[in-house]
Length: 113
Length: 119
Image (tube, rainbow over all chains, first blue to last red; front, side, top):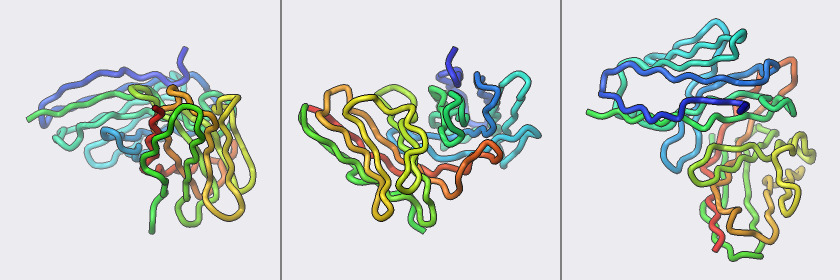
């Protein structure tokens, strides 16, 4: 089983659509969870941290279910500029150190007019 | 406030040469992380360093790769005798605080990466 697993997509949605991404992780000792965004050939940029209580930032909502070891990201009212690869990221997924981030393979989102 | 800086941005080496990649963390950050992204693949952790110490090198290949973060100056990722399979984007990230089991991981900010091409 992969340490962090997410649906690679691609997701092709029209502007204004709502799209949801899912992710699972294997190490129950992981403590920190993030969604990063990566544009083509650029560095990953933090989109939001994910907390057990769920958190929202504008059109983006992230949820964490520790019991199921499951993380989600919901994007409402998609914009063309949301087109990117979305990376599910977990710390200490392999159990070697809490500083180590493990990235999922990424979910490709394309928003079209 | 300058972000994480990496140089060179692009590096071309022939097989058997050495590659040196540099990373200057954000001001006030003393923790550095190196990740590698092979073509069409996800980012993979390589090594986590604090000033003068290697904290976690579980992702480093056993041979030809080494990393350091001296008391003064940037962190260096060194690849000796490069092979074509080393061609990738190498990203450095930095964070301000230490990460322990009692704290949440501090946010890691990524540099623009160095794209290594081995001919």
